[in-house]
Length: 244
Image (cartoon, rainbow, N blue to C red):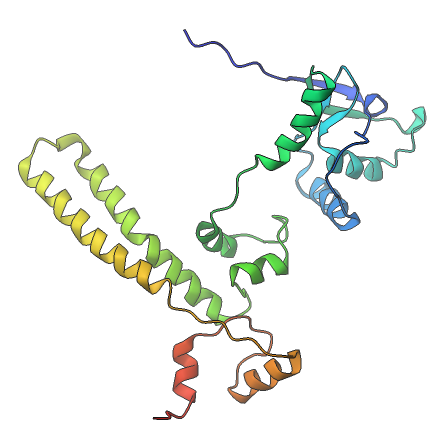
C-alpha cells in the first residue's frame, strides 16, 4: 500500500497571527498588489496562503495578504483584525526558507504556443497578463494579424489532434487488420504534415528601427497601423516593387 502524502491543514486564523517573512526574496510591486485586490473583488479569494504555525511566518502568499490588508484596512489593531483561511504547516526555519523559494520556482512555465491559442478566448488582463506579455508572445489582439498568427498555431497542432481522434476511434478494435493499417496510414500522413508545419513555423523575420518615429514612418508608408507589432510578409511583399 502506498504511503499517504503528508498534507497541510486548512484552518481559519486571525490576521494578527501572521508574520511576513523578513527574509522573503520575492519583490511585489504596488501594481501587482492592486491586481490582487482587483481579482479579489472580481472572483474572491481562491486560496494560496501557506502559514507555518511554528514561526508564525508566511511560507507563501505574501502578496495575497498584502492585498487583504489594504482591502480590510488592517492597521495591526484588534479593531481591524480579520479572519484568513490558510494552509497550516509545521516546519523548521530552514525548511520554511527552502519552501519559500520552492513554492515560486517550482511553478510550471507556460506552453507559449497553447497560450497564444487560449488568449483570444479570455480577457488577458483578468488573467494577470500585460500588453508586454502579449508583445512577447507576438500577439496584437486589436489587429487582423493576430487571427492569422493564431490560425497558424492551431494548424500546427491539428495533426496531433487528428492522430488522437483516429486512435480513439479504433481503440476498441485494434485486432482488425484493416483498422490497424488505417491507423498506420494516418500516422504516416500526420508525420509528413507535422514536418511541413514545423518548417513553416520558422518562416518569420524581425525588423528593427533606430527610433519609434522611423518605425512609424515605415508602417504608414505601407498603410499599416503604426501600433502593430507584427505584419504578414505576404502583405508587405504585395506592396513592394520587385527589384532584381
